[in-house]
Image 1 (tube, rainbow, N blue to C red):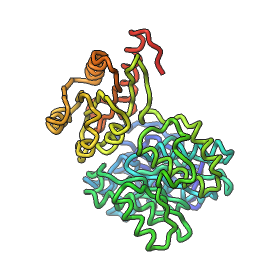
Image 2 (cartoon, one colour):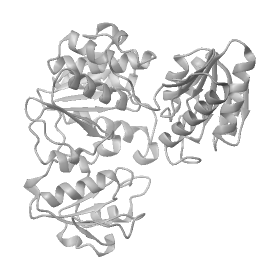
Image 3 (cartoon, rainbow, N blue to C red):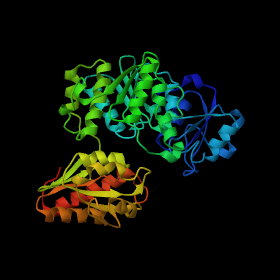
Image 4 (cartoon, rainbow, N blue to C red):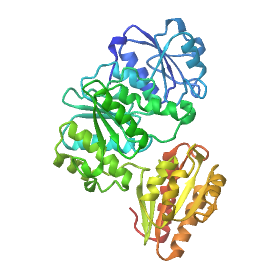
Length: 438
C-alpha cells in the first residue's frame, strides 16, 4: 500500500466509496489521517478505517483535502454539492492517485492516457516488464487503485493508466515518462467542451520534469501539436511510429488493427526507455493475450467469427474496429457520445449490415442511411441473433462485430456487462450448432 505519511495528523474527506475511494480511505488511515467518508449511493456503508457521515456534517473548517472519486463531477457540467462546498471552504479537491503519489514512491513512474487504447497499452507495458523479470506495479484507471499498489523500489516501475478526470485532480503528478496516445471527443460534458478535455489530458505532459520523456501517438493531429509544445519546452519527445519502433507489433498476435500497431509502438518506446532490449520486448509482446472487450475473439462457427469490442464506446474507437475486418455484421448502438458516427464513415465499406440497438438506434440509422443496410432491434440478443442468421445465409461468412460506438448505460451497467452478454450469446450459438469455440 502507498501510504502518504506526510499527511499524518491531517483531516480528509472522501466522497465516493467504490474501489478508488475505499483504497484512499485505507491508505489515509494507515498514514495517521482522520478520515470522514460518504457515498450518495451507499449512505449506510460499513467503514472500518474512518467515520461514515453525510458530507453535510463533515468538519469542513478542519478539512485539509477532499478526495473525490473519478465519476463524481467537481466542475462540469455542475459540481457535486460537496465539491462546491469544498471550493467555498478553500479545501483542495484531489484524486485517490494524488494520495498515492504523496507517499513518494521510489520507483520510476510511467503514466499512460488517451481517449482510446490506454488500457491495452498499459497492460502490454506491465506484461512485458513482468516477462523481462522487472518488478512492476500496474494500476490507476485499470485494475487496482493506485493507493493499493506497493512501491516496487528504485529498480522497479510503477505504470499508471490515468483518465482525464484523474489527471485534473492530481497536482503532485511528476512522471518520468508520459504517454498520450490520442485525443478525440469524449466526456465533453465533464470538461465543458473539447478545449477543456484537451487541457485535462495534456496535464500528463505539463507534469513532466525537465529530464522526463513524452511519448505521443503520431496519427492524431491534436497530439502531434502537443508534441511540438513539448519540444519547445526541451522535453525529450518521441512519436509512436510503428515502422520505427524499437520492436514490432508483428510479435504481438493478440493486437489487431492499425491503431494497435501504434499502441504497441508506444509501449515499445516506453520499454526501450526503461532499459529492455528489443528481444525482451518482442518476447513479452508475443505472450500478451490482450484484454477482454477490446477486439476480443469470442467464438467461431464455420466461416463466422464473433468479436467483442464493447469498449469501443465512441465513434473513433468503433472506426478502428471496422478498419480491422471485412465482411462485417456490425452490432452497434447504446447511449451516443458527441462524436456520433462521423469517424466510421471511411470504413463503412467493410460493413455488410448494421444491427442497431439502444437509445441511439434511430439517430445511427439516419446517419448510416445510404451508406449501408441497417435494421433496429430492441436488445443485444435480438440484434446478435439476426446478425448470425444473415452471416450464415450469406454462405461466405464474415465477422459479427460488437463495436457499439456508444456508451452502455441505457441498457447495461457498464461496457464489460455488455461485452459479457455478447460473449454469452455467441457461446450459446456455438453450443447449439455443436461447433468448438475459442
